Length: 271
Image 1 (cartoon, one colour):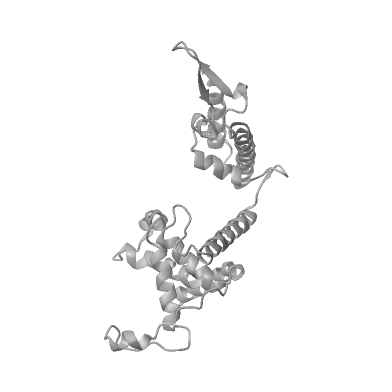
Image 2 (cartoon, helix red, strand yellow):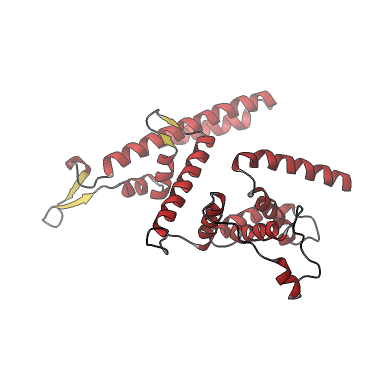
């Protein structure tokens, strides 16, 4: 422990006492990032091995400790959960580390690969749900399912042609007096587009997603312009995400960059 503290102290002193040039700071930063990446890979290897060894409870005698204090032998089975707890991480985080590890190639998956795997897993889950609900189990749903996921599943059904997009006659709302003007049936802002974006925004700011929205607000609230309420600004990126989400997945990144540039030019023109 003393040696570890000494190493940490030396690293800290080096970061603070090195010659303050951009090149020096960048080079040392690369060294630190390299250490972080190596440690992440090593932790992934360790968690993967531990899960392999401790996943099957009671399979090996050397993974079981005996407690003889009561006069009888009581087996304390070591599990992956106990391993994670003992090294200071949660079991869910341990599985997250394992999920990022390609054991066959002994490397970490790239961000692009992880995104593809998540998309494939979601697609597989939706197909499983659709199979259950169309084969005698119309109310079937996975564990920990919620309204936000149900809404995403409905979008998946529409995207893959299993369900036609819901058509709402905007004149019904206009006749009820909710709006002073009618919605166009064509153009960039049809009722169907606004309704879809609206549902997306509700899903992004409620349920489990409310935590992510709150964290986003907390991160940026110190940079709010004076005289502006947080909600008036922070709902804008959610609206933009809702519109971007209607584009094909492979086009969303490029479209987001384009929109950011357009907004920058718009703001500069206003100023």
